[in-house]
Length: 255
Image (cartoon, rainbow, N blue to C red; front, side, top):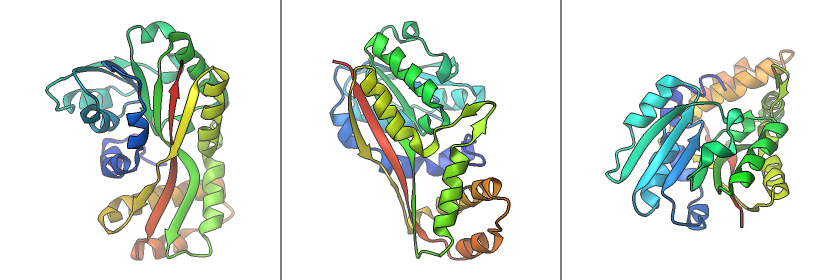
């Protein structure tokens, strides 16, 4: 979606992300957890959500390709028992050696941007290092708007096709990511637990829902230039609906 890596978009979605992520999976984490590597950390919102739920001192390694986001993440982990370092890196370049001494690998809203091969490689790297993974908010390809409109299903289908598009020779997983990740980690020998983690957007989230609608419809229009969605978007923005946007959280543990 347009602007998905900007600080403004990430800040707008942070409260909805925090409300959606599965605390049940956090309770299943093997302990103790002292060193956490957060892949594609963005502004560090997952760390701000997870750190207060873990016991004892923690060291977070925030990894991302964007130096500005890394700077923001490092400066915004306001917990007395937490230290932070940053790593300018790409998730596809991760090795088992990078995970020496790491107790947990995390990411948020990332797997759908990878290919099936990249997710399998990631699972294999974590298997080689025996590092558990908590991967949150992978897109599930499901959006329910209230009140519904007849065009909703067409736009959802076009958006999902856009999420599965080929970029520089890479076919992105999009909404196939939750199933692909589960299969990849089980193939790598992990015990995998998944939980739904939908955004539930109501009156308190109108600004986020409006921005999400612009991105959702924009991606659909890019995928289906033969269709016109301008009137639909104007109608939706004039009376922003309630929305339930599907995501899936995944916990993988190597015995």
